[in-house]
Length: 360
Image (tube, rainbow, N blue to C red; front, top):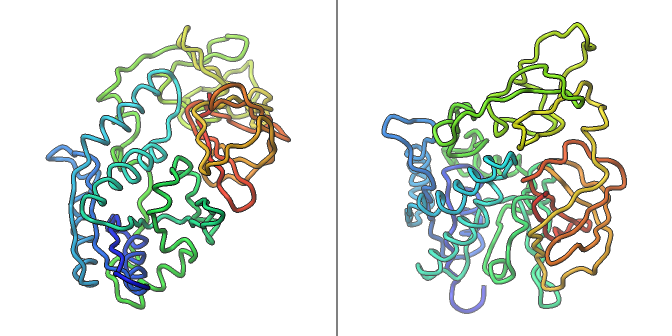
C-alpha cells in the first residue's frame, strides 16, 4: 500500500464473518479499528437479543487481533428510521424488510458518518458482496459465494459510500471464512450465524408485535368470501403463507393446504385459497416505487434484466417500463409466486446489482 496507511473502521458484530474480515484487512496492511453497534434496547429481563454476549465476543476478537474496539448505541436511530417504519407498514397490511432498512439507515448511514468522525478513510463490514470500480463508477457485484450473497439487502448504497466501503470477504466462501477462523484460532470460528430480526430475536413474531400493535381480529375468507376461519390481525400474515392459518377441516372443500392469497384492509379480511398452484398465488407483473439505481447512469425508460423478489431466490427474467419518477412496472417472463407488497425487488445484470425498489 503506497503512502500513508489507510485507516479502516470495521463493524464488528461478534460473529465469524466480521471477525475474519477484520483479520483480512490487517493482512492487507490497513490500520484497523472495530466498532460494535448496539441497535436495540432490550428489557432488563430480556435475553432474546444477546448484545452483551456479542459485545463480549467482539472485544475478545479485538484483543486477539490487537486492535481497538469502539462501541456506539444506535438504538434511537434504529427505532426512528427502521422500527417505526416497520410498524407503519404492518398497520397497512404490508410485509416490510427490516434488514434492507437497517443497512440503509444504520450500517451505511449512521455507522458510516460515525466512522468518518473517528477519522476513518474507509468503513468495512462482513457482508458477502463485492465492489468494483470502472469508468469513474463503483459497481456492486455479487459475492463469490452465491449461497451467501447479500447484495439483495444492499441495493440502496450510494456512490460516495461505495467509494469508501470495503467488503473483505466478498471474494471468499463461507467454508473458507470458517477455515481461516479455525486456522487463526478465533474463538467464534464455529459460532452459529445470527438469523431473523434483532428486535424480535427468539420470540414469536406475534407475541412481540402485539406489544406495539393491538390485535385486530377478523374473518378468513375464500375468494368467493365464504368464511372459513378467524385471523388475529392482517399484520401477522404474508402472501403465500401456509403455516399458522388454523383452518380446520371443511367437508365442502378438498384436503389441499390453504395459502394466503390476499388481504382486504377495508373489510379486515384475510383471503385464502387451496393448493400451491392456485392462480391467485401468482402474478405476471407488479409495480415498484422508490427505486434506487446504484450507478450514476439510470437505465432507459424500458429495459430487460433479471430480478429477485425475495432473498435466496434465483434470478428471474423481467422487463421494466417506467411509470414515473423512480416507479416502474415490472413484467415477468413467467408468473411469480407470492409477490408481496412491502418487500424489495432487486434488479441484476449478470453479476452486477443495478438497484431495487419496494413492491407496491
